[in-house]
Amino acid sequence: MLEWINEFISRNLVTLIKILGFPGLIFILVFIIFAVWYQRKYLARLMLRMGPVHAGKVLGWLQLIADALKLLAKEIIVPRESMGKIFLLSAITLPVVPAAAIALIPFAKNYMILSVKGFTLPLFLAIMTLYPILIVLMGWSANNKFTIIGAFRSIYLDIAGEIPMILSAIGVMLWAGSYDLQEIIEAQKSIWFIVPQFLGFIVFLISYLAMIEKVPFDIPEAESELVFGYKTEYTGAVFLDTMLGDYVNLLAWALLMNTLYFGGYLGPSITGDPIIDGSIWTLVKLIIIITLTFTIIISYARLRIDQAVRLGWNYLIPLGVLNIVLTVFIKYILLGG
Image (cartoon, rainbow, N blue to C red; front, top):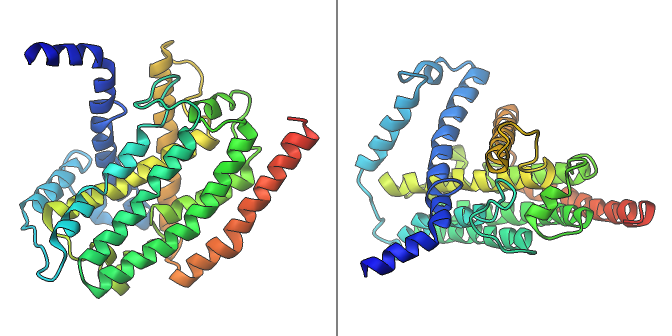
């Protein structure tokens, strides 16, 4: 038995390092800690909120530990009339879906957890479509009118955002001539796709904000209307797990945006090692995208659900189709691509 374990580890050492270290579990957990801290501090500066600016010693990171310990110490309450197993399992598995999608993202040339040559972009989008299903199960299984309303709001919002996002991704696939995420990155060596696919990027950006359910699209949670939406009945460590799901979801979509429009891991050589250089540029661009996200969060008020759905169906979907038509016309007719 011990020999079999040693042989398995020796044969799969690199893969295990990727899964457990970078860009796997440890990286995702570190990102979540950083993103929560950065969001608190950055938004506090923009909003002139002195509490979050000064709370916690050493740049406030101790406040994160205090909050995590507080949630872990709280009792996990399962509502009496809820569907207990579904109620718990849907929340516990919530971070798993975007984490599985992150496994397809190239952090450097030929450096990703899972290599599926040829169809990584469609597979990424297919995996991420499972995320709203878990949200519906969370809201429905809690057997609470606020959680059910929040869950259905999430579905309406995700459909209105997911369709135009897929349309904008089709524009990138047509321009790159590939379904593979690494080949899409390599096709951006001469110019990032945010330039020739700027219309598609705008559609993707708005849809991305809807998919991560941040202001102005935090409609499914809407504390002033729904207590806390589909998360209302979750407490303690399970609630903490739902929050982890939010930030892993944010990470997955931000990495996809970087891959499609900002050249992914491409950038000037820093250390001479392609894996280290690619990882550095991926992280730098990721921080810029996260900063843009948090800036938009602080700049706009929440939309109503009908306004958000109308934005997706009446404006973003037609613009996504227009981007595909323009891509075909420019790439294959004007440029003879």
